[in-house]
Image (cartoon, rainbow, N blue to C red; front, top):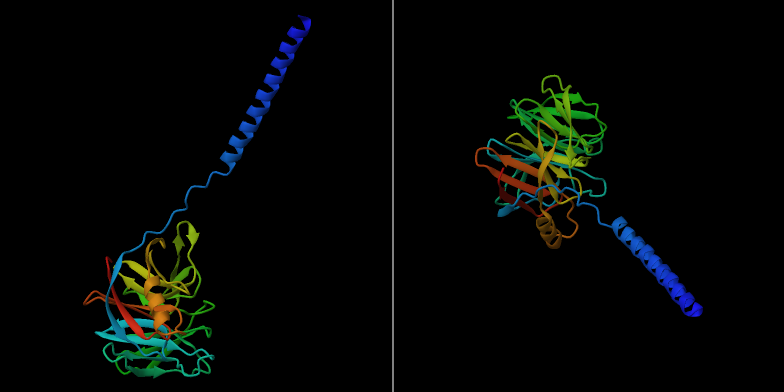
Length: 282
C-alpha cells in the first residue's frame, strides 16, 4: 500500500509538472503572438477619382518644366539637360491640335536651365534651376523687363493665388514671393499624414488649393494653401504607363495647367508625346 500511495503521489507530481510546463509554453506562445500582432495601418491620403477626357498632341522635344493657361492659350516652359542636346530652355505656345510649339522666349542653355513659369499682372515670370535667378517679361511682347534673385538653393515650379508668386524648390517648402519686390512674403511647409512631403515640382493653384507634381512619382498632391496639409491626391499611374509604352525614353510626369474659364485641366510630362485632359472634382 505504501508503494501504491507513493506511486499515486508521484503521478500527481508528474501531472502537476506537465501541466505547469504546458501552461508556461502556452503563455509564451500567447505572449509571442501578442508581440507579433501587426501594427495599426498607417493613414493613407484619399485618392481623387478622375476620368481622361481627351488626349492631345505634344512636341516630344520639350523637357517640360512649366505648363499654364493664359488668355486661352497653353504656354509651356522647357529645360535643356546636357544629355539631351536637342532640347532648349524655351517658353512658347503649344497647339493642342497639331502638337506644334511656337517659341516666344529662349534663354542660353549653356548658362541657364529653364524651369517653372507663371503669368501675373500682365507679366510673365520664369525661374531658372540652379542660378538662383528669375526673369520677368512683358506678357504681350515677351521682352525681358526685369530679373530677380531668390534665396532658395534651386528653382522648380511656379503658380499664383492672384496675389503672390508661389514657387517650389524640390523640398517640402513652398515660397510665396511678393511680385513687386520678389522677396518672400511667407513660406508654407507641406505635410502629408504627419510626414513632410518633399519633391514638390510643377504647381497649379485651383480654388484655394495648390496642386503639385511629385518628382519621379505618378502623383499630383492637393495641398491646402492655408495649412500646407495634403488633403488628397491623384494617382496617374495608368497614364504614365501608357506614355512609357507609347514612347520609351519619355521622362517623368511634370506639368499641370488649369483654365479657369472652362474648368479644363491638362497634364503632361518631359519628352511626352501627348497632353492629357483629365476631369475630377476640384
